[in-house]
Picture 1 (tube, rainbow, N blue to C red):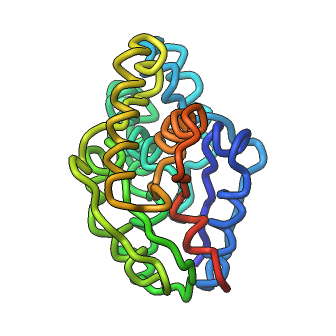
Picture 2: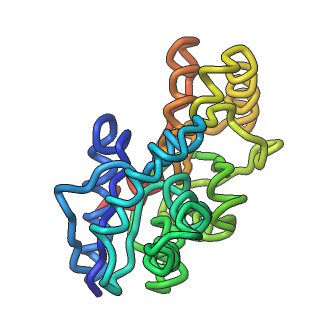
Length: 240
């Protein structure tokens, strides 16, 4: 299967190893990974900040670069995937690009969703001796309807003990520009999430979204706490 890779801006700039690990997993499963070096942002940051017209111009570029094909578009981010699936059709509702935008949404997959529901794979032969807890990002849970998929993948990792934290479906407090506009609330929400994770005895917090993990990691580092963050692609590419 040919897979079109979409790497969000912050992953490209801050966490490129996660992108390479995602490729590593997909190629192990027999996928041919195609990557457009001209790709940029999906348009979500501007949209969430209220600049819909500016966002639309970025989204138009993304649609033009991906229209006409039938290859699934896979991303290591439920946030960006959810934006493409749920908001592109609204942005282009009265546009000549309406059909292309809807088609794009139907072809967009978050990484764990693609592995479990399209490739029908759960056990990748990964090994990681660690006690970990999983964080449901708002985008994964509410926009992409992903709940069981990442857990099924993690439960198949040899040596990994998965424990659930309290209030697991509560937001971590990042929310993009929310963390800037409402700094104190955002920090308190992040603190609550990390403390719930620590209470499980976990050594790591795993998620589908590096935006959430980046926020939590900032709190962890500032307070020198004995826990780390891991993207699910990094876990699934370990121990081969």
